[in-house]
Length: 293
Image (cartoon, rainbow, N blue to C red; front, side):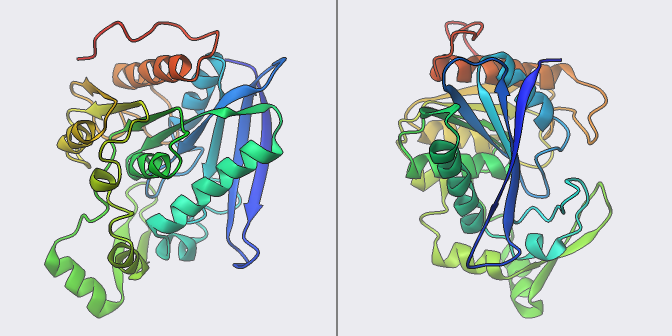
């Protein structure tokens, strides 16, 4: 296992008591100079310690990068970092609030952590987190690279009948397959999409985005249609699409992570290679002369 220097942090919102972003910065040990860093963005009902995220951070550190994992303020996960003991936070979460969290974490890393190189910043996002990572890059074109894993291409994923019932009842019931809890999503998400539709449309907002991007796509994804990654790749100006045959939404990973499938290993390897090259570390292995499939 790679040795890392771990530095936990917690960011709060003065105008919203109780809202916070918990995270940890993992750096290579004995770094003599500031190192580039990667923000790792989890998806809906995800959290920074879920399944493959700690392993992803470890791989990035092994390639000379700092990894910044964090729980978005609307994750619903409590202080223990595992249980969904703050359901009210998840129920009122919106993409705009998540983007605010990402911007806050990045600003903290750039301004308050001298060990990090603010001129070399990348992002990795899974599922909903992939769309958020791309949207953040559109707002921060100084981002050096983005990697998405089975990203959404749109936050609008419900039919008219579902939306009508959602508006009528004031909530949408959503079940968590792992914990068997049922949450009630408020209409705040619908309001956010209605008010900020252009800003929150990954395909339109990121059209022509020149930030180098790697879109990793499981061809057997049962949650997000694989065509979403293909559509995003076509929209971006500098994108590579990495298709992984037979891979599902989490590349075979569960929580807690017990077995590591070949699909996950491939996603980890390609991600670390891509980011180490784009963020110009000296310990990156491989390059991008090898074509993707």
